[in-house]
Image 1 (cartoon, rainbow, N blue to C red):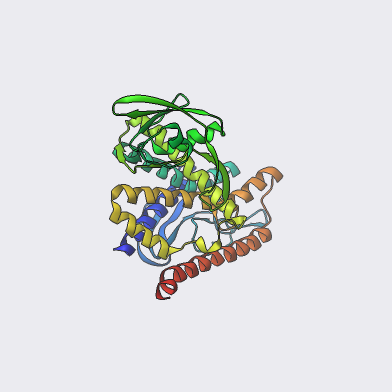
Image 2 (spheres, rainbow, N blue to C red; image 1 turned 90 degrees about the vertical axis):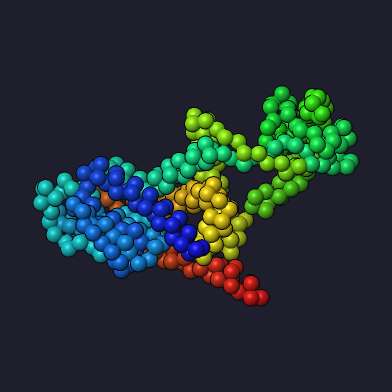
Length: 380
């Protein structure tokens, strides 16, 4: 079932991504020749209208093939092909070089204004981000598990214990700010910057206030880096409640969560480039399959949250300015806007080759890490 869950997740995310390209192409009047889930040999295909809808052998990508993406001749100049693809799309053959009729030019991707081409390309990653946003909104309405502000332990000889805070107290206010979640406590202590803070707790139905001076603490962040901060010395009781939000509040909360994940994804890429995050943390299809199975076993909410996280990763990675990714095409189009002429065909071709080598290298690294992580290490 693990493989099935992985195929479901990847299939939905690839469909959403390619649907973005497809719908914007149609909106811009571009003829779409093929819409494929997967790449490689065709397993199944059906033509509806002008578009052939395909299911292809390898489910790690997909593509939308638009009319005018292949080379064509106009006024004696050969124009380059342009591929609209997802992270692991294949190279598609160029159309036969020929001069297009005026009618064909109106449906050709390459003849559309550069801003229209940019919109079509950016639509894929944008749909992935919007899809994740929608999932987070739905999850907020379904109910979000939240750790309460109940104290499980006031650590001995730490600021909170010295001030009189006890196990079982529920923190309600820090410096006049209402507290309902455990994570808000860390935020409130950090905001004090080591200065004395006023903390209120509920104990036996009574509200009790304390003045506490946080002490300096060196801890590790999500990326394993040492960071300086402050603490008052309390541990969570681990009490979890499910909070439900109304439609409007869910939109706000869903937007906040989507932005947090987008920001974290970009930050993770920066940390990886800085070698703070080791390259052996990169995961591939085996890791995705395992995580998909685990999250599906944990319940629908966990599975949807995992899908949203993966969708944001797919959207962000596709915006990187690497040839063969959507971001690489956008880079060429922005250069066309600036210099008012298309990037030379040879430059595009060499860039595509370099980008493909980089992408294949990343795939090999991901597969290698998966094998080491799930097979070699376990056997050892």
